[in-house]
Length: 417
Image (cartoon, rainbow, N blue to C red; front, side, top):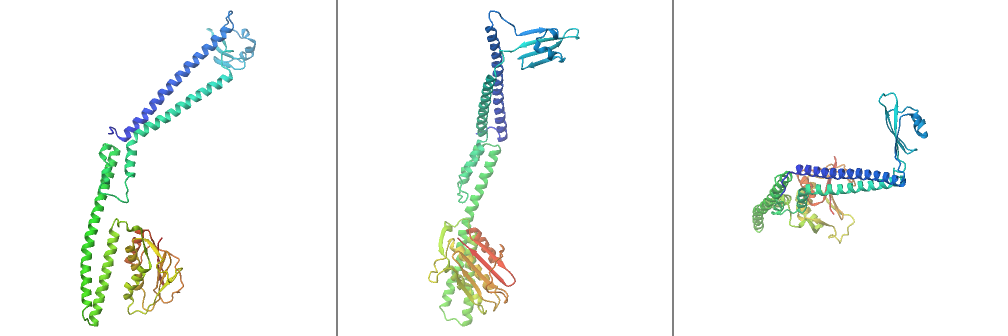
C-alpha cells in the first residue's frame, strides 16, 4: 500500500512542499518586477503626455558643476565620488562619473518629479504586497499540512487501530485487527508487525492462564473436597479426645489449604468474570475470619476486642465494600491470622476497629504498649508472607493497605471505598 519508507515519504513531502513554495514565490517576485516596470513606464509616459506638444526629457547631462541646476550646485561642491545618488527633497536621481581624462567629473540628472509614486500609493502597494505574502503563506501552510498528513497517514491509521483495542479485555482475535501486512515493510510495517505479534502472544498467554486456572482449580480443590468429606465421616464416629484433636488439626490444615488455593488462584487470574464490582457486607467476612483463626489463641490468655466506630450495633450489615468478596475475605483472614500468631501469651488484647470504610487490626508484641496508641507511621512493606499477599490483593482490587510496626505494637490498616 505504501511504496516508500516513512522517512523517505517525509523527506519527499518536505521537498515537494519547499519546491512548490519556491516556484510560487518565484512567480510572485517575477510578477512584482514586471508590474513595477510597467507601472514606472506608464507613469513616465503619462508625465510626457501632460506636456504635449512640447515634449521634455527627464534626463540631462552636465560636464561642469556651474552648469548644474542651482539646487544641485551646493551638493556638487562637496566633491561626491562616482556613483548613483538619490535626492528625495528635489526629486532627483544623480549619476556622477569621470570623463576620459579622469580629471573632471560629469553629472547625469534624472528628474523623477511626477514619475515616482505618491506616498499614498506606496501604502497601497505595501498593502497589496502584504496581502500577497499572507496569501502565499496560508497556501503554503495548508499545502504543508496536507502533504505531511498524507506522509504520516500510516502512523495515524496504526494509532487509531491500536486505540480501538480494549487492552483491559483482550480477545483472541484482537491481534488480527492490526493487519500488519497492509502497512508494507517500512518502519510503520515493522512497528505494526511487532504490535500484532505482541498482542497475539498476550492473547495466547491469557488463554493459557484461563485454561490453567480452570484446570488447577478443579485438580486442587478435588483432594481438599475428598479430605473434607472424610473428616465429616470421621466426626460421625465415636472418637476419643486425642483422636478428636487430631481431626480438628486436620480440619484446620485443610481449611488453610483451601484458603491458600483460593488465594493463589485469585492472584493468578487475569480476569474474574465481572466480580470486581460486586457489593458485599464486610461484617460477616470479619466474623468468619475471627472464628476460623481463633484456634491460634488456644492456650494463650489473650482477649479479642471488636470495636464498631460510628456504626450502630443493630446495623451490622452497614459496612459494605465493592470488589471481590473472596479476595477481601482472604485479605482479612491474613490480617487476623498474622495478629493471632504474633501476639505472645498474655500480651493482649488484640483490637479490631471497624469503620464504614476502614479496618484496623492491632496486636501487641510487648506488654508496655499503650492501649490507646494510634499508629501514625505507614510502611508499604508486609509483615511476613501473608501480609505481602494482602498488599498484592489490595493493589489488584483497588483497596489500600498499610502497616505500622514498632517495638511494642503491630497495626494493620485496610481501607476500601
